[in-house]
Image 1 (tube, rainbow, N blue to C red):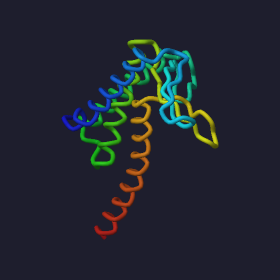
Image 2: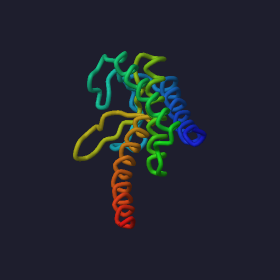
Image 3: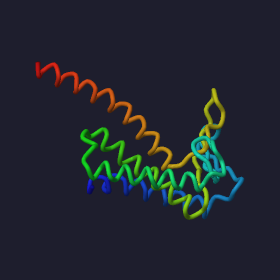
Image 4: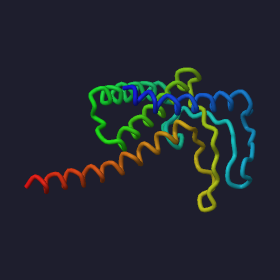
Length: 160
C-alpha cells in the first residue's frame, strides 16, 4: 500500500495543481499557444467521459470512478498486482481516476487543458494529467498481459 501511495500521490498532486492553475489563470475560450500549430493550453469543462462521450452524466461517472477506486485499492491490498508493470499501471490508474473524481465532486465537471493539434487529425480532444495517467496505465496493462502470458508459458514448460 505504501508503494501505491508513493507512486499515485505525486501524479495526483501534479494533476490537481495544474488544473487549479488553469482554473485561476486561463479564461474560458482563451487559447494560449505553447508550440504554435501543435500544442496549446486552454480551459475546457467535461461532464462526460473520454472524447466528451456521454456528456452530462457526472453522477454516473462519480459512482463509476468511486467503485473503480475501491476495487483497485482492494486489489493492491490483496497483492494482486504481482509484477512491476502491473503495479505501475494500477498506481497510475488510481492517480488518474482520483484526479478526475475530485474534479467531478468539486466542480461538477472535469477540467481539461492540454490541447494537441495533429496534422492528420486536427484538434485531439482536450485532456489533462489524470487522463494521461489513465492512458499510460491502459498501455502498461496491455504490455503486462503479454509479459505475464510469456512468463506463465515459460513456467509451465520448465515444470515439465
